[in-house]
Image (cartoon, rainbow, N blue to C red; front, side):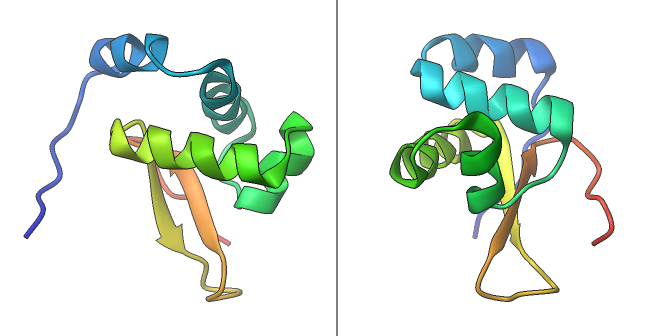
Length: 89
């Protein structure tokens, strides 16, 4: 059973400093552009899909990013910064 712990932006910023540049770019893209799928992030950042997937995995482990299943296409996940309000699809 996992529980969600609200983290301050200062804690998230500290965790972000330890991550690779690709993860920082993905996090900033989510901050500026809002919720996105993995393929949308790859397109926006011009990073390879594999690199984006690794960055999202690291960001989720750090608690900076969260994901949910897309209601439009259940095969995709929508990623957003943890603590941000989910947008309507």
